[in-house]
Image (cartoon, rainbow, N blue to C red; front, side, top):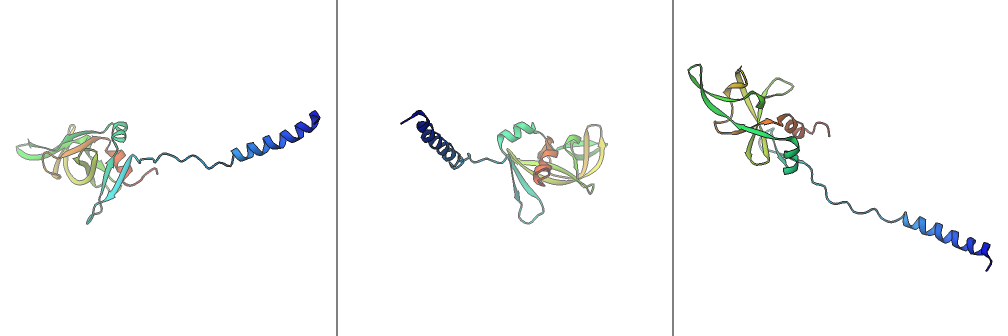
Amino acid sequence: MSRMNRWITVVPIVAFSVTLAGCEPPAVKATETKPAQVEAIEGSELHKVTLTPRAAERLDIKTDRVQEMVVRGVKRKVVPYAAVLYDAQGTNWVYTSPQPLVFVRHKIVVDYISGDRAVLSQGPPAGTVVVTVGAAELFGAEFEIGH
């Protein structure tokens, strides 16, 4: 076989092989875990937001507790002001954490702000864990803002 005939035979075989290589099915992706899982809480308009440990770390979630303090001579519930969220209607909320990596929005009524503390007239019981850093991101996850 002459040199020219060999090239005529080899080129179509190589071209056909390259075409077949491009026809392989795509590799199967590993299952992706969403950083936040949002579940409706039956009987309410609220949701439970569950974060993966990595998501909580990335958001740098920080918490504190609702405290009972004597303020101006009266025992009151108090939270760090950093825990208070305001929605578009001006309603006040905090995110509580009933268990690690689980967060639930809880309506509060702020009586007044005193320095870095919010004095409540209504809110979760003393001792309840509230989010002080990362609450806005939890709100975004709950309402799928930015998705």
